[in-house]
View 1 (cartoon, rainbow, N blue to C red):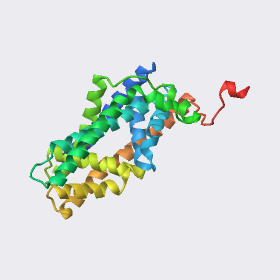
View 2: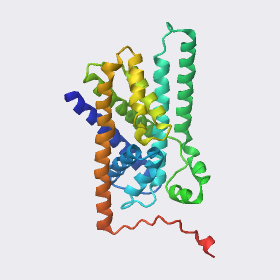
View 3: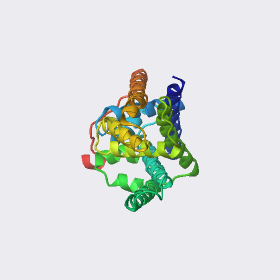
View 4: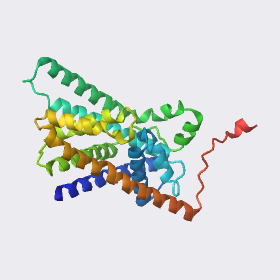
Length: 283
């Protein structure tokens, strides 16, 4: 139970790190919000990413909505925070794949690992470095989405502080898996943990299922089994891990969203989702 409690601590630590990263990006846009407001935004965004189809794409909007009481139009800053995190996830996963390469394997498998690992590192680094072009990308979106994000997205490369926060957050998320597995006697190395977490998360999020439900579980069982553990031994730990990583955090996120709604009602914040024409278009 102690290790499962530690897994939850790592999960909450990851959300705290996202909160700090979100606040940094908001400040760069000339806005300001309190830590608790940003934390509620991070948790509400986590619930959206887990419970809605293609929820990861909706997370920045959910975070911007949750910060509405203190910072208007914060979705662009949330978009930057999430893009940087995704880049860090892909880069760290690729680095783990490269680190875990064994020359004793079949040459084709060895070459495949090198190509996949190196490719993921290049893509991940490119995504993190792409903060400078993120405003340009936002500018190519449909007008309604462009208005939603452009007010708080900044043209700036990733700073050292942001880089450390991103990497630490990804490591904390992977540590949730490590703790849950160890609670059942499955002692993964740091490299194995990062590969299992990173590959299952990237692949599981691709089809747009709510939180990668089903795909991530299947991916984890397959990957960890490939490390030498029987599938029967891995199923229960994976399900418990997903209880912590998916269901408990989704529940906490829903509570945070409820608190945001209460705060909005108390502060008389009105969110108009209509696509109002720009002043020039009204004439």
